Length: 123
Image (cartoon, rainbow, N blue to C red; front, side):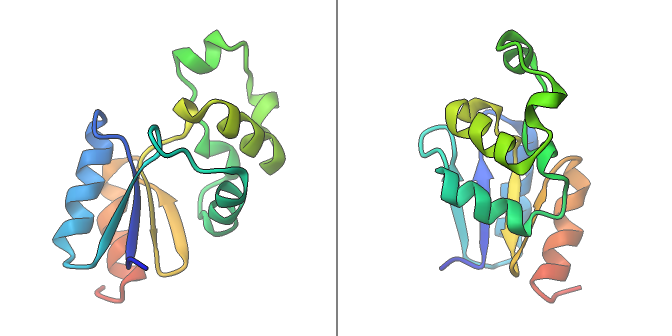
């Protein structure tokens, strides 16, 4: 198993930045392109269990979110977050970086380097 997992969208500058930071650590990095390989419900629940951010933050609030008629009340619980992301993987907030049994959303970009330094014990 890789030391670092990055849930990645290559079209996103924040996601590309997180991947560069992860690779620069010298750790083994697994890249999960969540749009072509969406996480299933079990994977999402495992991710939420270690996510240092609120579960609801894992859902992007963008034009797609609004276009689907969704509101904050629709993603207020972990069960709701999982249901929405299984049905609409495009709403998965990116990047998500997993290391050392913990996970963070890599927004803003400057969260990734300190997280990895601490999680990998290089701080």
